[in-house]
Length: 156
Image (cartoon, rainbow, N blue to C red):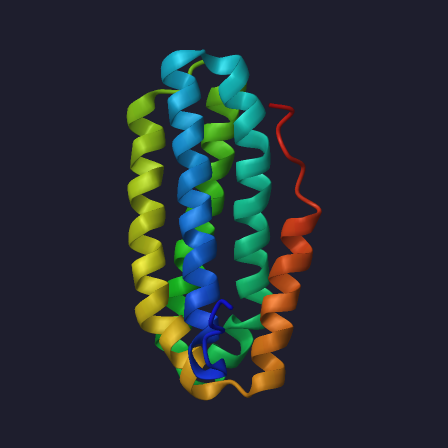
């Protein structure tokens, strides 16, 4: 029987796992761009972008308002990172659609997402595990699961 993390660690565990899945999806975009070209990369990019936006939106709606009340500086920093990531998603989506995406740019996004995940783990997820009550934690995880459930999957 798999062990269930205690409620005090579930936010960090759940959201860092989601970050890893996003990294894995972006890795498949990179592999497709290297091997098959822009068409397959674009088919993989669309669900990756939607899923990344769902993750960011869930944090914006369920974690950041509470974090703003207690740790305004950390919350502002994460909001700025989210804005930056959304801008990069738009920029790279256009480049992929125009068949002008560079592997180095996608790798840079990969590095940025990894750094962002570490920052959130330290600034927001640790705080959430310590500060949010169980119903708030469960609502956050349910919202993330629901937003991810509607993300389209590539046909292959």
